[in-house]
Length: 407
Ligand code: ADP
Image 1 (spheres, helix red, strand yellow):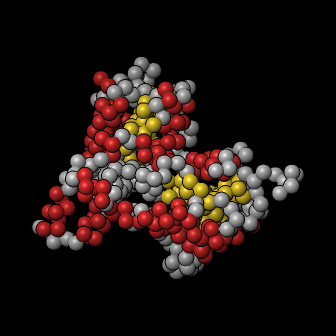
Image 2: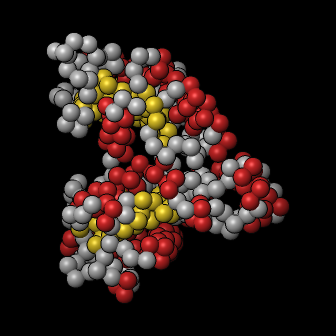
Image 3: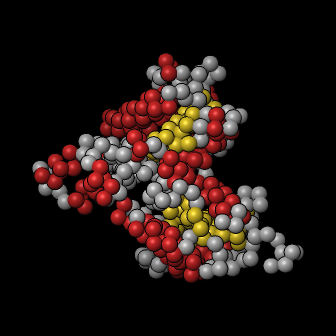
């Protein structure tokens, strides 16, 4: 590169699932989004690519078979090229990959080498649904741009600071260690970003504030963040533990599993599917979309009302638990699809917690906005905030910072 060449500042963020790839292209010179999109139903006849250029031009949709991740990324590259943003551009600085499980080894974003790939592979037994898809995404991106730094940003990284007493299950230590059974936590990129943005909203440095972050999407998790450092989180060995989610049960007595095996005659795989895909809100009332649940409640639907109450009860228990873990709380931050949009959830979650200094102002809570904002009344001791998450921006920021540092 000559001195007149611009410093490459674009980062492609890839979030590869088993049959989908979500992507965003950002220019980190000004953190601007250039294009966003997704490919879904990869491997089926009815694959779909939806591409939205943000530099001008209309959203485009392509349907038809896309055989595998390599074909998907090639199609994405072709769409980006139509807007002059192709993956072969010298302006692309790096590709940042969301990797779900980084175990204990990866506490920070990491440039992907063969050693790193081997470790991600070694973690497949604890993340059988996610890590294989992430590996496929990385391999595909490597084959497209072998010269480019590829960076892994791990969902577990932010939680590696959890103290042993929060991370260990109370089971036989040798068994736990032999099989790497412990609480890892997930959604870490979001918890890191939101806890930092919450501090910013309060006009403070992250090191000065204690925050309870409630990431309520289809998957949901809570975390306790002391001075910018995660000290506890609700997801565990897998994303099944903790809050009631769209389709996952969250916490339950582990003996339910033996009971289903012995009494209901269900297989391990059937129980896995039951607890991960057919439980939570969908198991309780048939719907996992909070908008639909609220609509049904408004029509007097008792099952939807009970599902909502169970969801809120668990959420409230975690707020109380993390209040106790932190001792002093400066803010509770709601984020992700439900947390950012569902005012009734926010209201119900802190209802009755005035003695803990927590309250929500009805008018502020009803405001719809994409901006981080406070929804607690002025008198409340603890700030309650809505802080939109942006995992892609966080992945791009971490990726770019790492590449720029020359690590
Ligand atoms: P994920 O990334 O885990 O798939 P999201 O963070 O996008 O999920 O959240 C999706 C969920 O957010 C939906 O299932 C729905 O329950 C909820 N949601 C989205 N928009 C609204 C809204 N306007 N009101 C209430 N809930 C909403």
